[in-house]
Amino acid sequence: MEIDVRRAAERADEELSLELFNAVWPQQAVTMAEVDSHKRAALAHADFVAVLDGEAAGSAFVAIMPQRPSVGSALVTVLANRRRRGVGTALYRDLSHWCAAHDVETIEAPVDADDEESLAYAQRRDFIEVERYPKLVLELGELVPPPIAPPNGVEIVSWAEQPQVARGIYAVAVEAYADVPGGQDEVMESFEDWLAHDMQGSGDRPEATFVALAGDEVVGYAKFSLTAAQPSVAFHDMTGVRRAWRGRGVAGALKRAQIGWAKANGYERLETGNEERNEPIRRLNASLGYRERSGRVLMRGPVAQDP
Image (cartoon, rainbow, N blue to C red; front, side, top):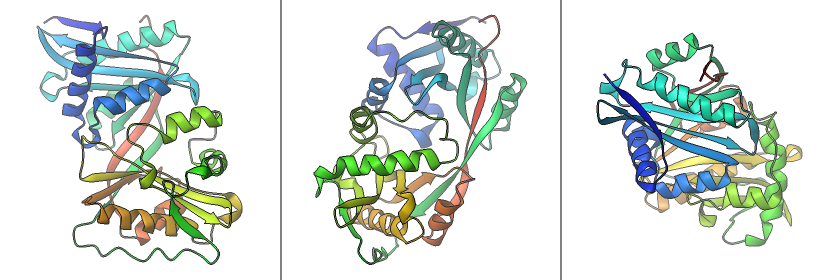
């Protein structure tokens, strides 16, 4: 049995890495356009492909993001029929070597919450759970969208209708990002970088981003992340409300606007993953009919020793 791990140096290897990822994580499938957008936002990144006895068996992607420059954010995938043969360990070793070369000693990686084998694998290597994201799903087939019903004095519009409010959206994001469980230690990017990375990626569309206005003030926003790899599903990306406006129904109005837009534009399902400590948004989603399914666990641990 021979395992060869190679760093992707050509487009074909990057495409193979994504193909393997989509095969292992079909519920998270994305297109190369989304991958390229994510890479442009990273400080550094690398793809790896693992070959077992001459056949592609797994891949890994690791990136250092400006929000967490001391952490390597990794995705490790091994085809089901190639597991338990050392492929994952070889990928972990090589991405650890890459992280160490970039002065990064900590790796974060998601694992399916019901994948006991992978969770145990990570725990044996001193990874610990730091965040848990149950999946929430709203099926749109027979659903009649509820009225938006914003609070008095608040108007819900799309960003496409009011493109000049970008800095107001950013002001909401500065407060909201810091208050999301797990996000307290993240570095907030400058307005220009945030706009390019968080709002203008290949999966971002102004007409699918909704803004709550109280007069000229942006008091909240909600956006979808969309991918051609899953054209019937719209993914909730971020819902944020200014601290002074929370508890007044702004988030609910934004969510209802999203539901109506998705239904009108032919989407069949909405999905989101809220960290389990984020009780306010979880309660709101439950009240709107979202149903919980098994999600993902974010594990954090050290780079491999003697990589």
